[in-house]
Image (cartoon, rainbow, N blue to C red; front, side, top):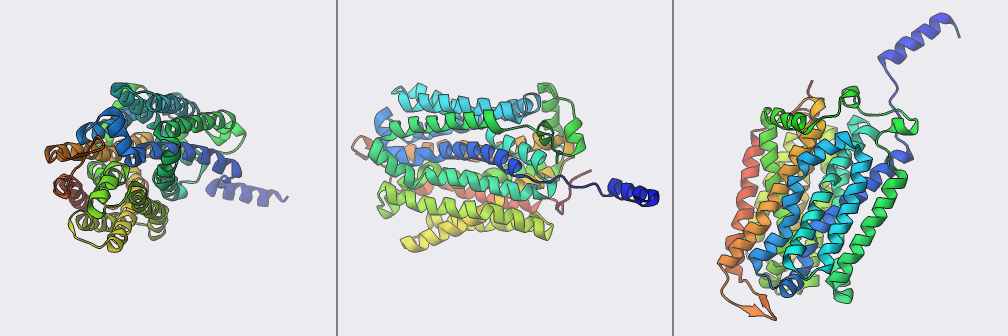
Length: 443
């Protein structure tokens, strides 16, 4: 080659470095992490289709049932800071392996015990273990895929999560009716052990470990492993940026209502409102979950295409809040109710933009910290709403029972669902105060 041509070629290569390829290995590794995230979502909402069985077997009222389900979220949230430390010190692979193994142990405990306290402990272990799922998914996406695909992969990840939630509706209800809730839960533990094996055999932290070029930003690849104190400092620093506060609380008002409804209280509400049996009520919730799942990658891809976050994020929040008002308080025929519920869930898919929006609102070195912070914001929604609704239902209980299970009337649900509507409306106000990032990372 002519020396001048060679020099010019080298200068061009330096100015415009080649983007590392996305290989089948990238998708396989990310897919295993997505499968673990799917199982976590399944665990979150599975109590919704076994409310009668849980109340009967453990002798629970609505308040205690809400607490049993919420133990997942209590420990999911509590583990976000430790998980942020471990993902840097252990790496995504090790954290994913031990998360799946611990989730399998907690699931087995929940499905095998007849003691309420141990059942709560099982739910707590599962919640703490699956806290790794979303952060590992984002971490592997950052290392194995180009930055321009981050919002799309976030949406696709949430799609996988919603597929798990979909399995926890009609399919799970049918399995429970054939094999009992305990047998199905123990079967879920076996699936998680399979995820452990796949992680051990396939997953790598970074393409460099497989002789490939990494997609991770240089600052992220070269940063030192952080201590708990350093990560705590990082949390304080990310909350110094105004968008973090608004997005943090707004996420809870979008995620919380849909997970509180489809994950626990939708089935008993639909039984009271429309006299639907559990399988049919689960079908309605399935429609909502499908719409949420489909909307998530669409919202991410559309936001990337127009180069803005706020318009889609805010529009989704407004439509979602309006939909929850109609769902909770309008006297709608069932087909109209299902249509509005579907639209509400579709609008809620814009919640996935909160991760990309927040990530672009802080410096790149805080990627893990801000992802953990926003994930906490997501989970405080169902963490507070599920037991909060249960407590309100308990206060309004008229003393009715059937087959050892407490029954709650429509007025009780109307009062309890004020919590859903209130937070959804507040989320719209919070998002309106955010500052647009135009899909560009902060320097």
